[in-house]
Image (cartoon, rainbow, N blue to C red; front, side, top):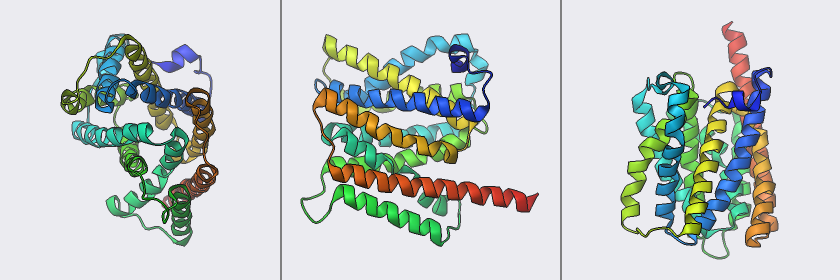
Length: 302
């Protein structure tokens, strides 16, 4: 499962590889959102999530042998289990949101993930944040309000689920970054889907119906896009800091907006673009500020 071998990126510096990988992951994750919506038109979203994980296992198992079983050994099994639990919650919330609100709006809300990462770091790691990062978080909060526009209609369930998905994805990011220090990219990708299969099967039982032929096609495309996207995503974050890759995430919004316009005739509201840009700007500042603080700490320690 060495994507470098297939893409001939061996000669590139690690940072350049990471940028290439994150762009590829964004491309496949964007199409994954499309296939989630298309699959859910015919079967319940709980089944969509189950088949996404089951088919991903079928895709990945043959690759385990070509990469060698040693690369899939778990050194921190507890972290894998916790990650599977948090990812499953985020997946049920995030996937459901994609079926309830415009794709571009859900994507814009997903930009809040780094803000949640910063806030969680305060409570989990006891990090101290200063005025400028607090101001950036407040700016991001303003961006959230612009997208949600409270005070008019009641905030929809889809928007609430999108924020829940972003929150649990932030926990996933923290765990993934921790895992990359001890585990291989192969083990991080494979064990997630293996653990998610039984977790996602339980709710799927209660809404079960066999997919039609066209739905099977959508489900396979979903699994392929999700597996490839997650593989490149994990490898990118194993090669570079989150801070250096965060600016590329905004590419996802116009890409999703274009695909949703072509396939579903969805035209993003002006407030989605404005709120998304504000949230994204605040998250880029937060991540870059954290990078500077880390560098300063290293220099002082040295």
